[in-house]
Structure formats: structure tokens, C-alpha cells
Length: 342
Ligand SMILES: [Zn+2]
Ligand SMILES: [Zn+2]
Image (cartoon, rainbow, N blue to C red; front, side, top):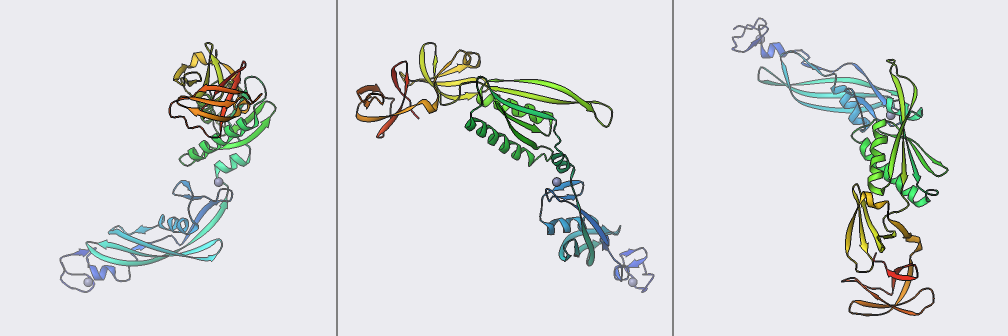
């Protein structure tokens, strides 16, 4: 084939031209002259190709420019190198060097663009800032007020769970944490989040949760809109408590979905307890009720300590491989002293 421009005989022609004539002065790849890049002023994430993403301004600017890249039909892009520079805090120029193949001939093209950052608020943040919530998780104690340290521990646990979840689902958030009389309320972005957290707390602390719903209006498509409330009543027992069950004294060492584990404080054997039996357990001492007792002597599987009430010496059995320090922790239940291993 003869090139229509230079007349050279060439096997490879495009649109009747030899490759050098075809490439001559032609923009092989171009970027949009101007690109708007949305940035949420609240979470500072950028809206890139249909998604809100957290990244550096430089990366966002370059990705936004790259998203507008248009090669001509005959070009196959092999490599893109972009560099951006700040014109002012809202405008960035992007310069690109792009390697593309035209009919197996590699060619290098330069192109440029200006990316303008537009401040906005993403939907998630506008919901969060607008106090949007779909469910409430209420944490209460079954008997008296929820103790401060239990409440703080649960709030910390929920906060870190939600934080981890939000990495893969940005619509998951806590709208508000409210200390209320008797416990704490957490307002949450979705119904399923409330339910999952209620289940998680139930599994790890025992107790049970109840669900109730309230009609709060209509959605934009005219459907009934409900808010769900998950009320979790924590049992009066917790891991670390000394409990009595079937006339024996135990330390509750673990709680899970289907029950718990008990350490017998007379023979130091571990036993499991089913969920249904947890109800018949009675708390004999909370961790704050435990006392320290001074160790006088250790011989074989026995330890001699001073009764913290009257400093008389008392002999106790010790578990295998027990390492006694200067003091040990004991529980006093119905006048009997029990060693409580940590
Ligand atoms: Zn030619
Ligand atoms: Zn945002």
C-alpha cells in the first residue's frame, strides 16, 4: 500500500497512511481539559468513579484526570504516568505521559488537564451530621443501674466494631451515644447494624435482647419507614464473678453464645454451663468484692494465708502449678474463704 501523504510503500497503513504520517501531529490520547473532583468537607473523602474513597489529594487528582483519558480508536494504552501540581488550593494541573501502541508501533503522547476540587458533603456524612438513624441499641442492666466501667467497656467494644465494619461499608456509623438513666443508648445508621450489635453483646455478655419497632413515616417511594429498638438487658453476672450454682462455688471464666465456663473453686476443675442454666446461677461476689490475703507459707498443694478479716491463719488447697506471690486473691462466701485464681 502506498501512503496517501508521503507516497511511501508500506505494508502497515492506517486510514491510508503509513504510521509516521498517521502519527504526525495527531493527539493519540487526550484528557478532559477540565475535570471536577468532589471532596466531602466532613470526611475528606473523594468521589472517584462512582465511589467515595479515602486517599491523598494528589492521588485523587490524578485518578480523576485519568478517568477522563480517551485514546483514539486505533491506540492501545500501555503505560500512563501522571504528575500533578497545585495551581491554588482548589485547582491542580495534571500532566500525563502516555505510552500507547498503534498497530504494534509504540508511541509516546503528552497530555494535560486541570482538576478542580469541588467541596460537598457526601451522603453518609450528611446523614450522620443530620442525626439520621434507623435503629437504637439500648444497653441496660437487668437489676440496677449499669455500672460505669461496664458501660464504657461496651461502648468501646461497639465503637471499635463499627469502625472496623465501616472500612468495608461506609454507610455504617454511630450517630450518637447517649448516657441515659439506667444505661446507654446508641443511635445507629441502619437496622441491621442495631441487630448485629445487639446479638454480639448478647453473645459476649449473656442476657437477652428484645426488638420493637415504631413507624416513623414514609420513605421517598411511599413505603412505611420503621425505626427499630434493640433493648439488651445485661445479666447481673459477668466474667470474673464468683457464683454459686447447684450448691457449689465457681468463678465464671468465660461467656459465649451457648453458655459459659465455670471454674470450681474447691477442686479447680473447669466445667461448662449451658445457656439455660445461666439463669439459675447466683452471683456470690463481684470482682470488686474480692479481697487480697497475705501468703504465709506454701507446702505441696496447700497454702497458708492470713484471713483478711481477723489475720488468723487459714489453710487452702491450691490448683496445680499455682504460683503464689506475696498475696493471693480470695472470695469470702458465707464465711468460707475461697482462693480465686486470676
Ligand atoms: Zn506516509
Ligand atoms: Zn463524608
